[in-house]
Image 1 (tube, rainbow, N blue to C red):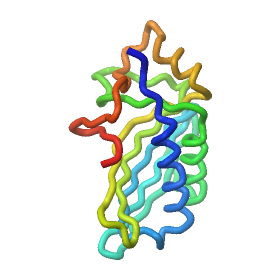
Image 2 (cartoon, rainbow, N blue to C red):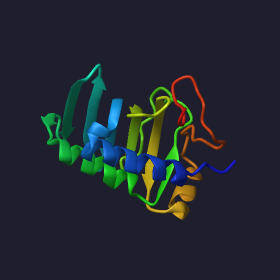
Image 3 (cartoon, helix red, strand yellow):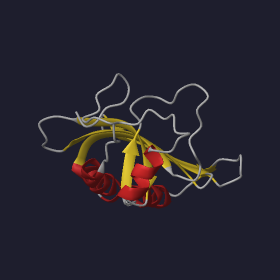
Length: 167
């Protein structure tokens, strides 16, 4: 079965993440945890607002380094935005099987994001692991690699115990 592509979900997620970074006052509550691994480096964006209190942490690790360093908020949001701006995205259907390592040649991002905008009738949440690729052709070729043992989403919407599309 061919893998599911996520252009529509990413088109929804990208402006929400940008809005959270630029206009957090538009959100009543949020809990965002995004871990981006790209080119051997790591960027982590963690921010939460609950009961009017905001708690945020932005950090990263340079390629080839083992030392974590705090990042400016704008840098973390910009890195996530660049990833979401890639031409195609695949998603894992489940947690990685024991011992599986993602290919460092392709950026991947674990996204756990829940929020409620001011005046919205309910909260929304998303929990997924995305792999970013340049375009649809590269995404399909990636999924068809003989060595690929990743559990990729082939049927949407993804609704699992830990990973799920918007709900």
